[in-house]
Length: 303
Image (cartoon, rainbow, N blue to C red; front, side):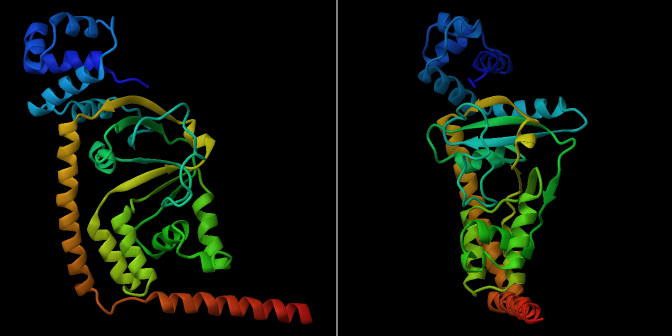
């Protein structure tokens, strides 16, 4: 999918009140370049894309945010607007089997609820872009997670830290629930959040401390599409160009929010110290359940 550059170019000129010649002079190109690009007679060069979007962002024109507002106004009754941050671009059809198996919920197509959320995860990549997606949720089965032990244990499994218990019935039940649906809505667990989950798995935090530390990071919700049926009800509507200065802007915002989140985590650790259960108690429960099931199987075999 190409950028909708022709319309963006006209929108930027409209907001600025510039003629083609005035904009061309500001960004150092010929007026005919602007004209032919707006008429879609020529494809924009990489230099022109960066020059226009960077100039607009410097003038405080957040064209991608403006388009998000218009897309939201145009949604149908069962539609949601979602966002996918891509390190480069989506090549071909969406493939739910293409992603990494050690993502939060395994393989699937991952999206977020806002433009800021999507761009914050790809702002460190030089050729990244953000896709706007319309999603019709009719006749689909959804599994929704909150920040709780079920969510933490499920993510810990998919990230590979519960391998020793992967065959336990309780863990298998968790995983079955995470796949017995068309799509998932769940809190985002980035690497910083996973470090907190790892602290819980390592026995440094109780489940209650972990829950409140994770809630303090407040990264928002993600939608993970797991089935072909779910993917058939999403539509890529637009691919947005991210200029270097916009990328740097959101990178700095994420750094600031990360610092604030880290401070909240420190306070949450202190405030909820001693509350809840450590992983050892939870593992003991799992092992005891496993022993009980083994005893029952042995008793049944004797009978």
